[in-house]
Image (cartoon, rainbow, N blue to C red; front, side):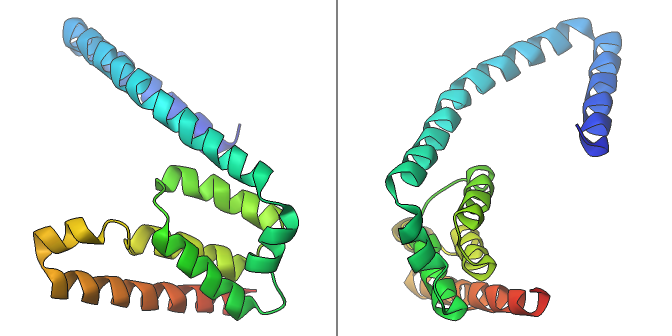
Amino acid sequence: MNISTILLLGGTILALGCSFYKDKKRTEESMKMAWGLFLKTAGEIIGILALIGLFLTLVPQSSIKVLLGGPSSLLSGLYGALIGTITILPAFVAFPLAGSLVQKGAHLIAVAAFLTTLTMVGLVTMPIEIEHFGKKFAIVRNVASFLAALLIAGGMVIFL
């Protein structure tokens, strides 16, 4: 464990101890509620991680290298951006997946484009966005977010 993890765990245990000291009954109720929420989401998290593992098993490393790690890092970045645009994944799942993609041979630019479009662009959720915010807003926001994601990924060239 690194120092950050130790500090966070220590702080959490300290805060929990203070909470128990202040109001034991409410703290116990909160812990029961938190445990229930954990159990409710644990299945989903495990399912998503299993799907990622299945994806990485079924998709050959050579395909990942061709699509996201080809000779052109700019074209690979565009592919990564397009994949991120149509993918729905929680960020806490996307980051480990991104690390796995880099290990399998994907360019950092492609992974950066994938992650930024994944979090900033919502092609699949666009109908809901149109319903709540209007068609013009949804289109402008998604196009601007896509272009910004490409700029962010392109900025990775400076750091490589």
